[in-house]
Length: 229
Length: 257
Image (cartoon, rainbow over all chains, first blue to last red; front, side, top):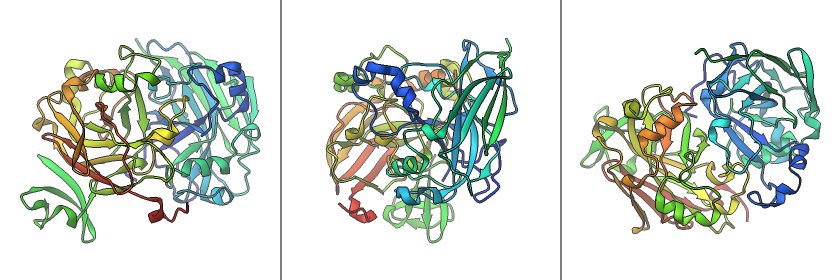
């Protein structure tokens, strides 16, 4: 791996001790997200529901610790706060069988995947998901003893609960996801695979705060500011 | 100056071109096939253009719902997909259309945040050749092009040389071509880019800070053709280099039919 670790990110309590800086996420893993599109799923431009996992990259300019305020750039009035469980890879995973997939996971992290809100998923602009500091990664816990497919996720905005979900409702559970992704792209120690953002992620604006919690894993507290003029 | 990174006799070396192939920083002169070629720079974020040559837009126009007047069509690839010169890339069994894409790769040298087009090229460290492979069979209409098409292991070929920006006064003045088994199958010229290098840096740095080692794959002209196991694919950009890759089959990787 040639990607250097990004400073400010959490260390891991287990090998490989540091994140690699590579983060890939999954969209539409919550069946409610697809259902919400209704018949549009079968019409142009999609033409059919997705077959393979719908993946996206959070590039290294997006990676940051939770503490610094999230700055909404000029022209961006709101951000979607996507709460996601991150699987931190511990062993090189290439074409891993589903039955052995979780043995390649070292740790779990709570992640806030911040995006410019958008409702069309054919070929969205890269800037929706690639803003500086738009992937906030919280403290890591070892995987041992935790079932990644039975984790409650909650989001509160300004102290008020606004979303309650669970990884249990994802269409692809963690092991299936790892098998499908590593079938064509090897994941290396320190890489993070986000397993999905539950449907109904809240939208926040400057001046607000948000708290993401994944029960048994950890929490992130974020504050949102307008960019200085 | 042109530099390469190669592995030889137990170590990784910086190398420079030599009449007999290449010369390591320590003085050893070797032929091209005596070393393992690594990507010639430390790869950060890979930012690829889906459609940046007018003729390629026409080639794919049946599949599109947008025009070249829109925002540049940008997608991301990960460093895990990178492979160097003279490497092997797996062509899986059972796909009908796997194709190369010869592209000028622009490597960022100075951090770029909201830079204007006029100052954009000052942020470039150098250039190299890229072959940005795709397997079209796996194309779906969700967040396209999907990673299963464009971010496969061995799908981003980079090299052989990192050419200093000072040696490329005009990145829009370069002829490029691809040869499969010695036959020219793709030809183009960087003057035909819809969005030029400086415009791309201006566009990207407006919303994402570009860091040293980030690389922009600036798109490919038309002439992307299926390649098969055993084919040798050479992507050439005049003044930048000739990047070779060979397609190999599943059996090398222990993958059963």
